Each structure stands twice: as structure tokens, then as C-alpha cells.
Image (tube, rainbow over all chains, first blue to last red; front, side, top):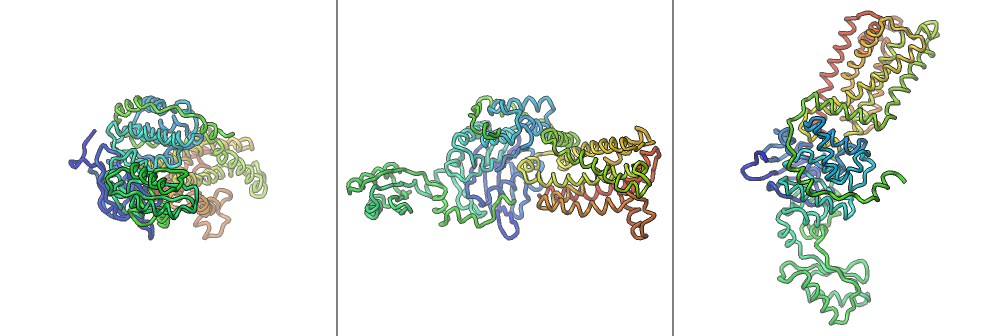
Length: 335
Length: 282
């Protein structure tokens, strides 16, 4: 597609700041997003993800720092930036009172298509997104999954160079979520850069090649998926014992066998061992060794599961506080 | 069962990856639309909203009818001897008053709309910035025209006879719609400035009631105290009401038309840029 910066970066920010009254919603964010990739911005509610996206999409004016999209300043060259990006907001960015077709034709016309071309393109997009049957229905009658689809369809009426997806799967059932992921993959395969914000580590894991973890307006970790996960740990083993009386003993065994942190859950028969990162053996190997040890000691395990590191764990590991603490900063939707 | 739940449970057709890929590749970028074209497209959006939510025409149908009937029969006997005689004087004025009052709904609809996600999308489009707002006002111009036609019809049933004929009436309504379009920028400003729908309504009332009532719509200002006459005679609503009244009566009140258009230009020049400033800052 057209001109890219010599550095090959779709987005470059330096010390980006946005304050709302007393709250520093975004507090010095530095990002470097390579063109042609999916870049994940991971963080809890209120971390500053949406505010950052809004500044990059020229909807909010930064209070400090700089942001460039394909080398263009988002404030001074806002119009150029607008010509190259599309935004899919956290809440469906389409008109709920209008039908699917009307929404797409409206946007098609605003993007410069003639009446006929706007209709044709809308029809094709609705078809490709499996929305032909609902084309004549008002969007307010759409299900969550359908809304997401029409929203993304609206964002690719003109294939953008950079697509912002702000929590595209929040509130969706797993099936619809997988379908959104498929769409994102198809969009990226055609060369569009995607900036994806999410609260879910597995979503970032599935789609993004690089991830920035953001908390209280600051980037607290950045790297490839592998690097990020390695910093957190391989995951954790969750166990449920038959006899609560055996729990102290089980805790001891696990601690010795895995050399790992063991947490006692509120449930008197449950405990969780966080697996180490430095070890050469995989999470599954560590887990099976733990089970073997427990069996040898005569502790009966009722139920067992191996968990990926969750966002909570990433947070705990990176910040020392869990995601819920982030809520004391003001809800970012207020922007 | 609502429609929402029925669609929810139904399985969605799968997304077709191949056709999606083909669409992404073929997506050539047409040149940006002109300012006029973008504004008209937003105007079309306003029409679509009226089509889907026709109840919103209540304020341009029932309200104007009520205004004509109420004031004709309330004041007619006392002020002009009979309602039939009074309406000859009142109708153009009450037309101006009602339409100018209706303009305040623009602020409310702007205010409710900006909370929605679709506004973010509009603001991230590479289009002429004011076109979103102009679009609202174009849709509203249609509403003002409907209100005018409704009131004129009721008035004629009650005995109003415009001596200016079709030309005079059309010229009067056109002047009123042009003025209202310009005047509405006050409301787009408040719609963007104030936080809630209620506060928009509250402020609108504070502006609209004194402005419309303290005018020559109901009575000749000669009976008013001097200080009030000074205000009333110079009020944009008085100029507009006089202009519309005389146009519909078949005269050509060049002064009053110039005053009305002058005020319209002033409103547009002051509140248009303020609105756009707020829109860009939102």
C-alpha cells in the first residue's frame, strides 16, 4: 500500500499522555507497532487502552508526548491519518436505528463511493460476513456477534492500512469470539496492520505477534508472546483433593516436587501451584511429576487441571497487584 | 419474545474467508466526498431515522396544531374581537414561534447521539468536519417544513387567508427554514457542551421562552413599556415574524428580510465555529 515510514512502523508513540482532571489516564506510553502485524495492547478495564486508541485514531488530543501513524502526526496531520485508519470501538460503532445495509451504504457514501458502488460493496460485505439475512433489520435487533461483524464490516468498507479493534470480543460467547478472530486473521493476511486491545491474554496470544501490557496508563511490559509469557511463568496446576485434611501435606509435596509457589484456595480442598519459568521441562511434564509425587505419598486427587497464565497472573507477576486494583483509576469509558 | 432474542439464538452464517479476502484486496479507495456530498449523506441519515422512528415527528405535527388552536382561541376574542380576525395576524407569528421552538430538539438529539459509538466512527472519517452537524440540520429543515405546512393547513381551516398567495407563503416558509437552520447552531453548541439531555432541555427553555414570547408574535409592541419595546423591536424573532407576516400578506418587506438574514448569518458565524470547536475537542 502507499507510503510507509522508513522505519516500517505503523504506529510510533513517545511519552503519550492524556489526563482527565486529576487522573492521568495515559501516563507516558511508548509504542512501536511494526506495519503488517497484529499488535496486542493488554490490560484491565481503566488501564488506558481505549484512551490510547482514541488518541491514535485522532478522536482525542494528547496532552503530552507524540504519536505518529505511518509517520504522520495524529494532531497536526489528523486528516491524513483519518484517511488511513479505521476504528471499531468498544461499543458497536454503527447506528443502531438503521439497518445493516443502511449503515454500510451510509459509510460507503461518506468514504466517497457513488450510490451504486456503495450498495454493491455493502451487499458483498454483508454476504461475506454472513449477514445477508439480517441486512434489512435494524442493528438494535442484532445479537452481540452480529453487531461485531457489522462493525468490522463497516471498518473495512475501504481496506484500511491500520485497523483499531478496541476489545472486539468483550461480551461475546466463545463461538462468536472465534469467528471474530478468524476475521481479524483474514484482515491481517491482506496486509492491514491491526492494533488490538483486549483484557484477555489468550486473545492476545491467539492473534498478536507483539504485546504491550498496560496498567494505570503505563506500559509495564512489552515483547513477543514468548518473552511475555516467560516473564510470567509457564502456567499453573489446579488441584482438588478428596480429603481436605490432606491439604497441608499436599502443599508440602508440591512445593518440594515443583519448587513452585503454592496457593491455598478459599475452597478447602483446592490448591494451585504456579509453575516456574526457569525450568527446562514443560508445564505438562512438571504437572505429571507433581501428580506422581502426590500419588506416591497417598494423597488422592479428585480433579486436576493445567491452566495457562491468566491475565490476573500476568498482572500479579508484573505489578505485584491484581487487575481489580486498577479500577481505582477512573473508568476509561468516561472519555 | 422480542426480535432481539430470536436472532440471538439463531445460528449465524459462517464468515466466508475467501470472499472476505477478495473484498479486502479489491477495496480501492475512491476520492473523498465533497463537503456538500458528505452533508447530504448525513441529511439522508436523518431521513432514515425519521423513517425508522416516525414517532419523532410528533413534535412537528401535534405540537404545532396545539399551538395554533390554543393561542387563536385563548387570545382571539380579547385581542382582536374574534378568533377569526386574530388568526389573520397571529398565524405567521405563531408559525415562526413554533418552528423556532422546535429547533431546540436538535440540541437534544445531538446530545444523545454523541454518547453512542457511531459518533466516534463519524469523527474518525476523513470528511469535511462540519458535515455531521450540517446533516442534522438538513434533516431538521425537513421537519421545520413539515411543521410549517401542518400549521398553515390548520390556520387555513380556521380562516387564515394569505393574500400573498402560493409565492408569498413559500417565500415566508423558506425564510423561516433558512433562519431556523442558522439559529439551530446554538443548539448543536449546547448539545455538545452540556453533559445530559436534561440540562440541554433546561438551558434551551431558558433561551427559547423569553426570546419567542418577548416579540411581536402575539400583539403589537406599541402597548408595551418603553424598555421592553426596545428589546422586542430589535429581537430577531420580531424581525422574522414581521418578514414572514408581510411576505404571506403579499408584500416585500426588504428591511425585515435583510434583518432576519443578517441575524441568521450572525448566529451561523458565532455558533457554527463554536460548535465545531467543541466537536473537535469532544
